Every structure is written in structure tokens, then in C-alpha cells.
Image (cartoon, rainbow, N blue to C red):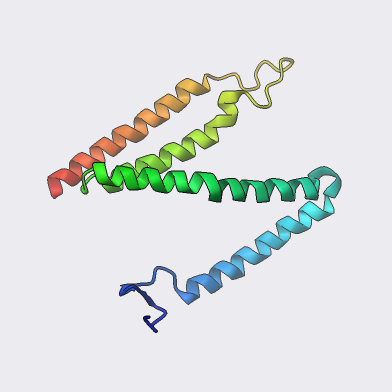
Length: 149
């Protein structure tokens, strides 16, 4: 085993102790502030229900979403040429984030018939246009990477 904590498997570590300390110094007070707000406004935030939801999301992510993402990435990395892989990986990540953000709008969550201007756009077309722009960018990026290689 390598005794040097700055190197893992012969490669430089990606996280420095300084970065960890800075992250903790900034993150812990923000988390504490959020928890304080949840507890102070407990009648509105329902801390028990919120805790169940947060734990449930973490379990679903770790048990379902992360393995699906890993298997998908592994499979695609075998098919996609090496020069295009960074662009495709960025495109996949962007696609997933856009779809997650658009999901409530596409489903119409929060829609109120008494307020016709609420959720009044064609969110499906907007998502398709955004995804088209993402994958056009991926194609251009991959083409440039191919020429450079």
C-alpha cells in the first residue's frame, strides 16, 4: 500500500487537504443554517417527513440511479471512440440534469386551472430544443477532437 496520502494507485490525489478544510469551513455553517431553519419553521417544514424524504432520495440514488449511471457509462465507453468520449460524457450529464429539472414542468406539477398563466409554456418543445442544442454541441466538440487526434 502506498504510504503517500497525496498519491493513489501511483496517481496524484484529486483532493487536497486544503480543499477539504475550505469545503468544510464553508459547507458546515451552510448546512447548520439550513437545519436551523428546518427546526425553527418545523410547522411548515415537517422535519420528520423531510428527513424521511432526504434519506429516501439518498437510498434511491445509491441503490438505483448511481448503478444505472455506472453501467450506462461503462457500456458506452466501450462503444464510443476515445476522442469523442469526453464530449459524449458531458452531453449525457447535461441531458440527465436538463431532464431532471424539466420533469416537474413536463408533468405539470403545481398547475392551477384558476391561474391560466401558470405553467403556460410548451415545456416538451423547450426540453427538445435544449437537448438538440446540447447534442449539436457534442457533435461539434467530437468532430474537433477527432481532427486534433
